[in-house]
Length: 415
Image 1 (cartoon, rainbow, N blue to C red):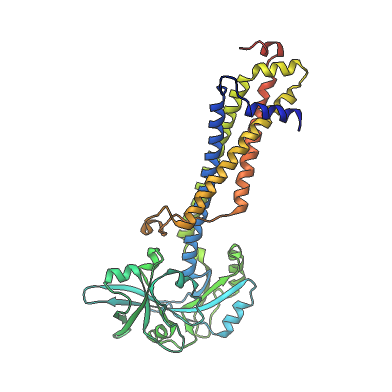
Image 2: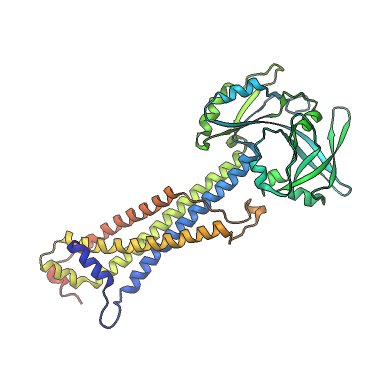
């Protein structure tokens, strides 16, 4: 152990005969300030990452990562169907990084009970559809039997719409669809209820099989509203969207133009809102690091004033300014290190408890989730600790230059 570190450890642990020195409360305040700053940074980071993950997953769950859709409208301003045959599927699959491809079809309709009605978008999917997201949102009942060859007249309804219409799982409900010359009616059975807590989806979508929707639209089995494409790595979303641009604005044999858009294009307002959260986190991190550095420097200055006689004595005995500065730098790093340990302990403990037991709840109609979401990113957690320690060390090193001010003969007589 070096001379400087030995003296620093003695200063950190020393007590007077009458009790603690007057600087001990300042040391504790400095350590608590670092601990609170680190805990707040970790909790803020975990909450924002969790919130972005939960909302992004819900948006992607309904729209996938990339959509191949129609850009051509009919005379009623309705999008015409595109051909989603095996030829198009093979072209998309040739692009590396594609995990899954699924067809879907939509039709506007009206759900009606004896007391109320609601305009909805009926989204039809087939047996190839990835059901993981729908299963995670299912609240009651089961999922419909999705098929592209047979109609089941089964629907999955959101919890909000089911409550508003006064229906439940097992009930049968009429749906009406406007045609060119007449209105068509079909009776569906509600087999399941889901809830994403995203009003744009819960209030507007009914899920059923793609066969039924195609029949309502009078489409053949190769026609769909579009393709939903899932990629293996979300970080490569823009890159893969550009690679699929060879399809964009090409036409199928019916003269309908394809369009290729990423989920960031389709739900631009949501992702722009999530991007704002990053700025909020940066501001919190900067403020907490500054607070932590200020408390450490305050404690260091108090210790230096209390130990000014010791500083003068060490200089008289031959210690250089650099050596004395190292003593207080070692002391301050011990202080910051202990604050980091306690801050990580309490911050990560709170995050783990919230992740496991959902102690802090939220209004899902406002925040899209029913409890504060938590997601750990260990690389960012280590980066926060490293940056806090680095900035604190730099500030401590700068403050330690005050030791060089004053002559030993003057400081040794200081009372």
